[in-house]
Image (cartoon, rainbow, N blue to C red; front, top):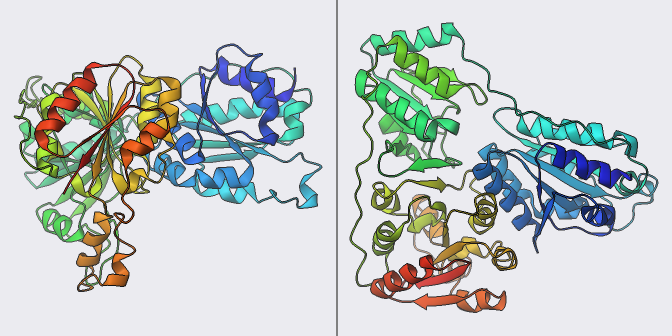
Length: 515
């Protein structure tokens, strides 16, 4: 058994049975071994950003790692933006990078690079396999590291000769570890603050923003008067009728500073202290005032849901104290296509069990409000701020959950970072509806230009902010990759088209032209 086969069998032994890949010469042993190892599903991405983003979306919804396969340092570098997002989402990923044979490395051939340095910023665990007989052990270590709470990217570099030399026995199955319990002392400190009558804010993320955690947090808030907010960006949030809804922490520093003035205690639940997304002149980067004490109830990787449950018990919080969102479906939008009219239509049509991969950016608007009372669904956000995630993460989510409809809400400029994801959706027959917000500009950059008080956007500056010359025709882009596509220019047509498309299986793109 060659090393590549040892590696694959080790992955499959632990249930890592999907590999998103863009292989090259140094990975051909792996490609050949896929036919000899039953149980591994290979998924091709035509660009490495798609590979990384799909693995992220898959991990968020499957609650287990996918594998990725990159070709040398430059291939890995092409995927770094979406690996950054995955790192911020704490997604478990077994990241495999092929490299030149060990004896070929000293010759500085054209594709030679410092793969370790490329991988280090996004990898919580990193190893360069030294010999084929260690591949079973190294792969098993990578799986265990990826799955270690709260989840991380584990990168294993595999030289080509380690793939073709005899690899030895596959590694034994890895069992998913449980999160660490929160100490009694920490719980008592939180209970004491809640009994004190002082103003308390809980900022939550991770598994806490799924149904059970949200119900516990809502019970606690309703009983004690504490306020609970979700991080600005969450990897996966469960939402909809019957599930308590949470406000998100504000993105802009002036809003956050005003909010934080109202609290004496900030309890962090699987998150870190809030900071400004960007620096602005005369605005703070650190958003918590000195008068507010910061405590960690549960660090990322600790049992936050168990901690909230223990707090509810300690404070005798009634089991029925939570305030779930009420069932409320908006009327579909009418007239011109605007962020609000599109949000109304999305809310009117969102099916039960949907997975929403959202990267609407400045067109997000009233989407949270209009969908809060829809049937229960999951919402995937842009965790790391690197644009170009949602088309790819939608593909990965659809592979993780083939029985659930996926809706990708994608700004047109951000979508152009990795449109190759459309091809993968068609090839794999994925049940994804893509709604493109086509405003023909990088609207977010106009907003930032204004926030920085740079005056009027000049003609030369506009050349860096507008993407309408030439116009992006998303229906042509989609059809060129084999995907059915429809362009709409008013809210009534959007509602009719989207309703029809979402009743049919398979991928379809709708371009909503916002004029």
